[in-house]
Image 1 (cartoon, rainbow, N blue to C red):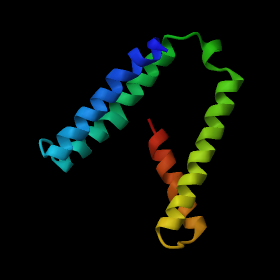
Image 2 (image 1 turned 90 degrees about the horizontal axis):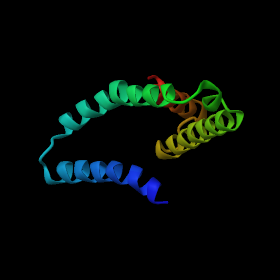
Image 3 (image 1 turned 60 degrees about the horizontal axis):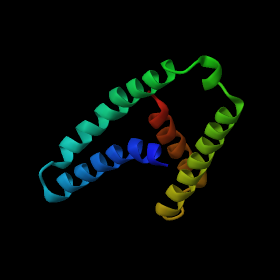
Image 4 (image 1 turned 90 degrees about the vertical axis):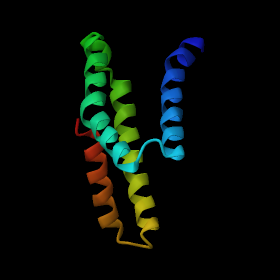
Length: 110
């Protein structure tokens, strides 16, 4: 339990510091968007690649992990599409799911 807290505490402290900085006006909206683009397209892929290269390949390609990841992606995709459909006041479900798929692909495009 302490090992998990040791890993996650700095992450949540950084998120909290960013929230307070934006809320107090120290950081402007455009700056947050720039940092978000950097994190999404540069920092996060580097972090994932680093984490994957430190593990043996047979440990990474476990069926349980791949199934859980795939099911989680499908749940997020369908949930996002349905929420978008409801948010846009009964917009066509097919259009909402297409937008949801594009959003999911954008998130996974690193």
